[in-house]
Length: 478
Image (cartoon, rainbow, N blue to C red; front, side):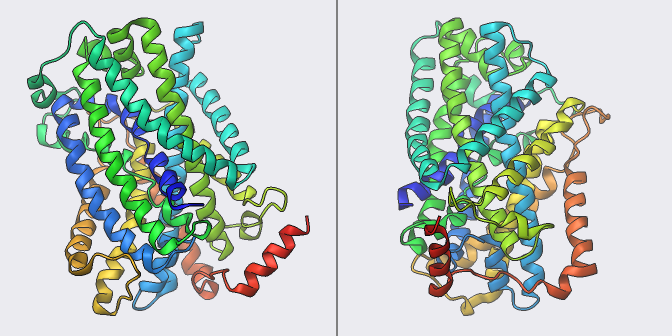
């Protein structure tokens, strides 16, 4: 992969046309236009600090293991334990973000099929589409890294041009627009909670969920030229470009709102906004642009997820590791890991059949799992102090300040997004995020205490010239 392809993977997984649109309805109910417009740049800047801290560590340790490998190298003691739990949080977050992306795409596809063919928008139909989307993404990734890299390069331009097309259409063609006072100052709360401050914080999930997945640049470093520089640049630039593009997109959509209450109550609020602003044909065309971006995004998420699973299982840290870390000799990809990523994502999406807030929970799980994994190496890097061996890309004297703010922010959002998003709290509105996090953490913790601490010594980097030459000889013989 080139440096641009490495950036393209993370930019595609962040995907402002996926995260911004699939959780736009959450923003409409938890804070409204004011929170959508101002929450995005605030969360984007905090995310940039997390990304900068990650990028500095990535430059020192460019390997597919990424976060959990960094934790092992940076821990002052008990490196294997730090690596173990970082890897499990990363695994949880990666599977959840794949589920969130592809489930969101399935929701949008269901809405389009409903407009075009009268296909009922039901949770059962969405699950069926969700399964098909995951199947397609598994098959695409099975064909090999070169095909996926080309599609990721296309995806960057699809996203950028897509934002221009959507915002341009919504700016030029609707007969009326909302006022700037409405877009930047109107606060809305339909969550059932009485505290506006609490509701505003809940609404930050829209932005924070979108800004996930940029660790993909780290996981793809073993397949990237000049990894110690390209990996960090991929992380940082994917956040910066997404921050700008996403803010333009959100403001453009919010100005185009025609009937707030009706659109906020729709199954897919952005789709209803498109149709109300541009008519049926124009709305469907914009929906196609968004769906294309979401499908690109899910494809890249499966790519990054499978590489993390491959690296983690290569070190024996997953049940059945010898099976998950096999490389397919024909396609030269970790095929079994690809299908574990897709299968795990499907399981996480199933509760949507009986829980109204299941999608919010999936996105919360993605945020908490990924960001804890993101920040643990940063925390350990802070403990290292001057002993930290910098790579060619680093933050200089700003390293400690940036890292400290990043750690505090992740602790805050990890607590925030476990809290209930709706009131009253019932079986249908219960946020099952803490349950999913505790189940995975409990499994990893028990396995560690009972068995893994006796044999897991941390990541084994498969990268000596002799080992790589042996792999190439084996693959070239096919």
